[in-house]
Length: 319
Image (cartoon, rainbow, N blue to C red; front, side, top):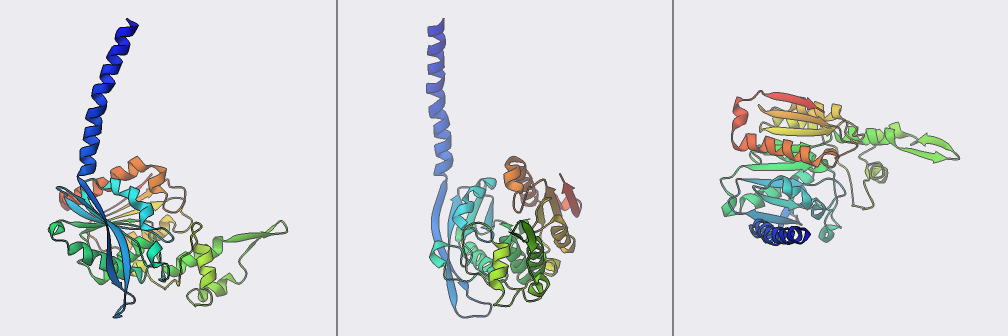
């Protein structure tokens, strides 16, 4: 009897594994990932340009297109895992100025000039003949979400819909919160940053930028930075496409009240805000990847199928 069970087990696995492998292989073969590069203006109105790098994913029978925009201090290659959220899309993931290995000499503004990079990426994406006629989504988080809002504000034709995770409300507020929350210990006593109120007023002065970068730093990387003053709330007033905002309850850098302010000022006739149990900045995905993927796909499907036309204008969901 034992020999029979062993025999049946071996037969089961021998026949099951090739079929599973074949299914996976077919899915992988349907992908075509290649390295790409394109030009972005060095500054708005400038004739000088900089080169940006990225990865382009082409899928057979894709239903829509997605541009993925990363956050501050992160390289585009580090967010390639997010592509699985969009199984039916052609996808472009690119590195913002100053963030890729090839462009370390470029200067990051944490949103303002990165909006030029977003527009340049869209221009490149839309120049590909086989991608035309499909709706274009942006999936962006943190700095990338801010840059996408600013870009859409300047050119409302860029995106057909937007998924925006933890964009900051204003550059001033994100610096002010960072200065207020920064502490250091000396002889067993805890102190805040001396003269922080003056630093808030001088936050965008070139002499105080090292301090600004210190309070915003996330990880061990260093990126040449000169933060520029932007108002995401004001820019959102011209966002008319379907928009899905995501926020973490415990985000110290960009609390839910900041994103709610952006959401309320967004002009879109179909907008959503989801406040998750995330533990810190851009943690909604990592806190519950399955739930996150489900909700993002649900929003995308509603837009692609035009089901949002029959739904209520605004809705806030809190876990």
